[in-house]
Image (cartoon, helix red, strand yellow):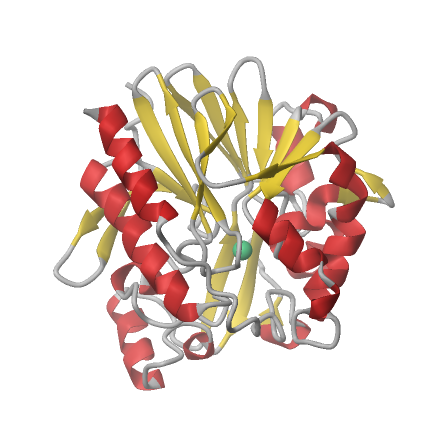
Length: 330
Ligand SMILES: [Zn+2]
């Protein structure tokens, strides 16, 4: 039974421990200028949008673009020999010296609410081929004023940068929702003088100004009818995913549970530089990916390559990613 199934999965996720023990990372985070090359494909005028129908809800991926980074073995499988990482990339027909990261903010249009899930880099990303969420939003037929709620899965800069544009709030009519633990972690003065200080300052600049309009969410909280936020810590202290259901159709918005569609899914236990608590992230990854595979539900990962929607098949080791095709059309 669907309901019981969800409840069980939520309990499983709720039991995951929050690992605050290793608040490093982000010293060389997603906008480290040395890590990038210009993306020849993502021209400023090309906005990528993917609309699907989920029961009565419209789900729209409004791509923030993508960036190119170097030396994948320094980000994925950092606990493995570089040769092993390169071999896996090769097996997946991927280059070994560089990799592409996509960014997939999502609109959930329920008919009464228009919820934007994460906001991309905003202005800061434009020189690197990202920061296109606003253009994609408008290309999809949504003006910023139509957004009634912005849900932030966590507060890393590639998720919060789009909250402000030209010095003002991008979504003037929206209210906001973010995990309470995540907000408390990033707002704390304890970040000053650590590797996480840069991201802390971003949170002070972009998220704190809207605190009065923000709901601080806890595990398994319903943020709108059919949309439940579930704690999935590890990537960051209060990282959350969303379970979406409409007219019996389900979708998991897995945020940054997994970052690379091949390496991360095929070797979910490998360490990832972007995960703040690597061990905790691996535990969460196992639980979330297992739920997606077992329940055969579609998922959208924030960093899955555009159009970003797919399914998972469990393998002896890890999972196989099957990109969605016409499953939502008939
Ligand atoms: Zn991210």
